[in-house]
Image (cartoon, rainbow, N blue to C red):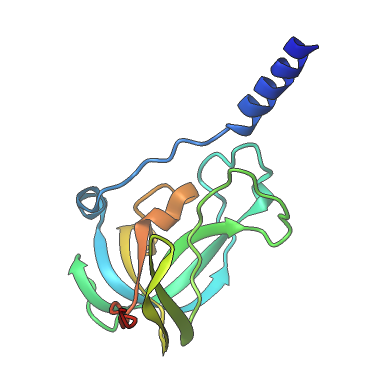
Length: 180
């Protein structure tokens, strides 16, 4: 009986350890692979008829839907797109019909603002700074490739498109709490 119990525990551990390998991209790799590196602000997002270009990891193709997000260029770090220009970026998200996602994709999501952010500074799970609440437009550092149709897409694979974007905030400071 003891061996059978140990066998069940090991089977449960192996089944729960199923994980997907995800590449870690350095900033140098992202910049090198990009046609456009820019600070962008999302304006709007709409659904597209684009089909997910890669494996959907066994999920039906209808579980992953295409989206075009329009962005305003705030600054260009690489590429020839001018400030205040508008670009469209193709990316994918799960359909609203998908209820359970185990070990799923890391799709990028964009919300137009203004948004309210709340920042709390912790170190070793203890508060070391005050809570700051601020409102601003969401802004992203984007690493993009140009598509043949003129739109852009993430440099990283669509299944992990979040790696092509870094959210930026103006409130990068903190107010220290009083020390004893």
